[in-house]
Length: 170
Image (cartoon, rainbow, N blue to C red; front, side):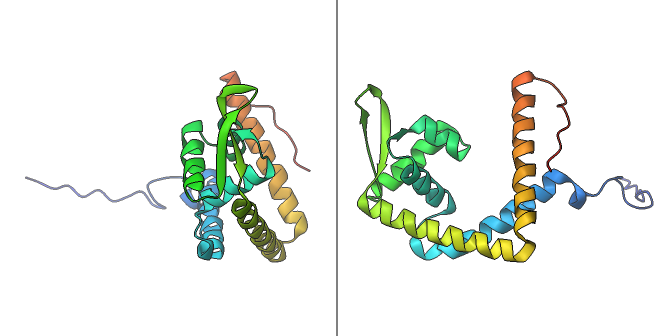
């Protein structure tokens, strides 16, 4: 068997840089921020997903699984799995909606409310830390930009288009 060695083109095999791509940077930034957040709540015995789920339920008591899934940006099966885990831990109680017995509504228990408040306090402190790193206006710009990306991607998904109207963020 003969092995042929091919030298890569000057400057690398690809023209663009992985690390300069928006999707890559968003993903990497998400993993970095999420990892630091998980470290800040590790002693609470909750994963980041569980902490978000508990806060969402505490902020919107009486919501159903589908609404919870929309809030979390996940599918109903994952939202149900997260809610079930919190219910097993005694942090959430579920019952049938009196208006529609097919719908399961979620409410925080007193222990769930207390823990959600602690998560909220830590989230507020973490947000202040991030703001101190880059500034309030930079955070506001990022949030506006993310809003535009989310809306634009949702538009692509619903219209089946391959482009959207360019929007400013400032």
